[in-house]
Amino acid sequence: MHSDLLGHDQWTRERMRVLLVEDSSDQAELIREMLALSSQYQFELQHEPHLHGGLDWLRDYTPDLVLLDLNLPDSRGLSGIQRMRDAAPGVPIIVLTNVEDEATALHALRVGAEDYLHKRQLAPELLVRAMRYAVERARVDEALRESEER
Image (tube, rainbow, N blue to C red; front, side, top):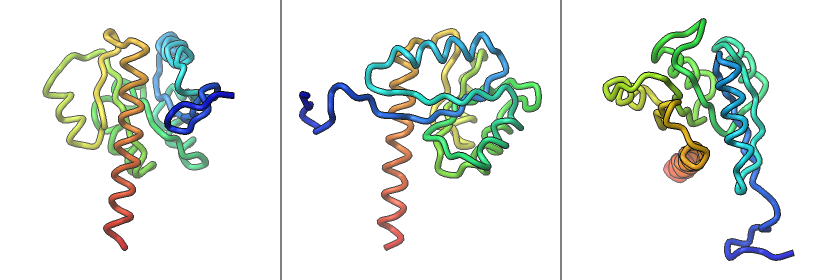
């Protein structure tokens, strides 16, 4: 087998565990299909259609990343971000929405989201890149926190 310059086997893909909190089954399936196209990652996707289902799942599992719809039957607006952050501190959250509103996007980032993506503009490369960057930023932040505690 060949290895790339970073020492990773080019025939294996890095695993990323993702919690998708999205009430639209069609949108969830579209995201699943986009993630399946990745040559770099093998995504383990847990789909929950309600915020409370996602919060329940987080009691037993820790994902690498959360994809969170802002318009859920049991949570509307930005309050879901804080509830997710409380349930999974340190886990990056990317907001998915149909609302193109710069003020809401900035507010989402201020309350703890790593990124804010408009569903209608999603493309597989954009989604995977945003996820990869969010996870890497979280790893760097955690390493920095650990080094400061020493």
